[in-house]
Amino acid sequence: MNIRQSKLLVAIIDQFIQTAVPVGSQELLRHHADFRCSCATVRNEMRVLGEEGLIQKPHISAGRVPTAKGYRMYVRDFMEPSAQERRVRQRFQTLKEVYFQRKDQERVYDAVLFLSRMMPNIAFATVPHKPSVHYVGLANALRQPEFQADPLLAMGVAETLEGTLAAFLDHIEIDECVRYYIGDEHLLPQLQSCSVMVTSYAMRGQHGMIGIIGPLRMDYAYNTVALDLIADLFRS
Image (tube, rainbow, N blue to C red; front, top):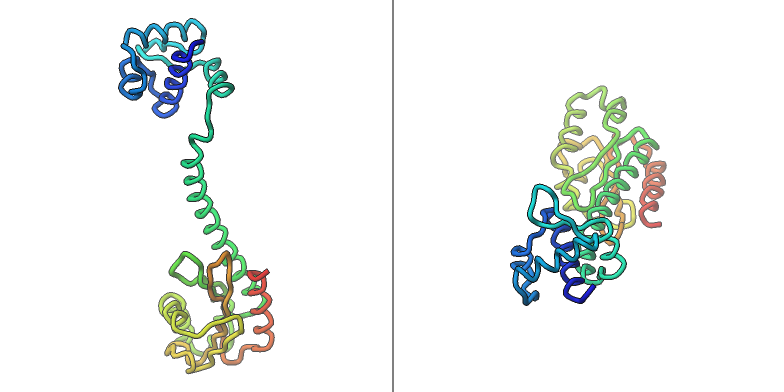
């Protein structure tokens, strides 16, 4: 095989990989200006490649497609992965970030579920890359005597989780210590008979909050330890 034939084989395979359309001589010259020869010359060289079993002509087309033998020669002798490295790396970085964002969200969801199973209160967290608050445990919290006795309070808690909690969290002081917002301290009218406990977490350079909402009567000492332990899952 001469140099022109090898370049022609590579061009045919590269183009067919991209288009899945049989490659003809005119189209090949149109896409590859570096072939300084006539269509007749290209057709003659394609005939030689066909005789060697490297390309073949489908019955329904005048173009040529690579054979398994042609692909084997391409991979063994002519393929240049380095030529695709930049495009592959760009695609990899994009997909890697999407992958880790999804894993970050899964970790937060798992942590909130874990926390909710440790107590009869509402566990919540902000989620990196999402402008929302994820929460679990509303049904358990509403079984508490305070909420059973005051349906309006229960409704206010539900409305806060669906609406204003995210805005409240945007305006409070937060760090790695557990912060307590008890009664009217947290300036959420619907939760005047509740307390909010919250702390920060960090994950892959992203920061978020994780916390607890419950009645004023909640077990602050137990919940503080529980919240610290769950937040430590992100710090480890």
